[in-house]
Length: 364
Image (cartoon, rainbow, N blue to C red; front, side, top):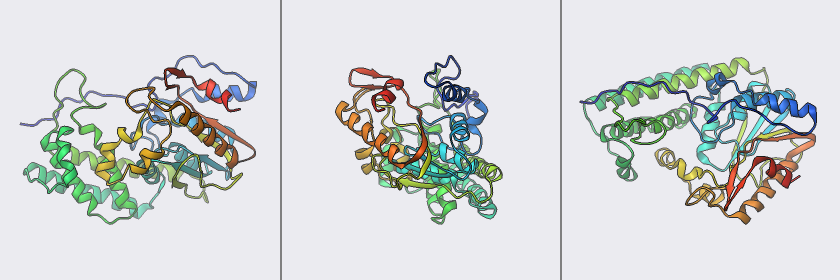
């Protein structure tokens, strides 16, 4: 008989570690601002829509909020050329800035659009109601052990999910994809995407004591409804903070080496570029690509700095050329006197560790 394992509270963080000493250099004024940005407030990790969907390597909201306040003014344009799931865009719109985000990942841009599309009161109510309806129907099917007709690609998913969980998730997917293909429908799809990892046999949410994760029938369905309610509440919170007249962010699926943005548009470029040789986002999110019906083909070709077989396995020359090109693009879209703040994680390129301060100096 299936049962829900005892829940062990875990704090989800956008940083793997918090706190510790911060070393700064350069001019005293900006250096002081930068140091203060890293006084991370853990409560902001789930503020607004930041807790809606996990995404590796994302910027902490504390840094985004502080940088936008320090280096731009209301009404000005903030650009994130590696916007990922949209943290900078959320904070920019909440602060009354025009925001433009670009990312090569169709998953990242889909999450970013959902997190920054306010929907309006009536559509938010419809989102929550549709999620409850879908959850109740899928949960009832699961309890009666009714198996949906799964797509051909789903046959291999039994390696990732226990059978009863897989069938319930496929039932949820079937019902979610039957909803209209509009803002609410896209939000429901991303609600499904946001819960997938939690129900895998292995992964970041798996038990660490060697026990098998046990999940009762109906739990995935209830979590989908809860996630929709959380998203709706986050969108309300953004709407309440956002000054009147603030435009909706523009989110583009594109290449940071060729930004679809006019010259001199940005007062601030705020971004976290790829950690070279550390992540392969296409492989990391391959389950979500499949479940959402998104093709990773173009993304695999254009993503920058992706590791291949292991950490550090990345083309050294190709990374250097790509780095020069996206930094040149950042310079192009900045207005005279504009600011660029890149939050760069240490990478591994070839056999050499690449430390963040060295990256900036190499291209100044």
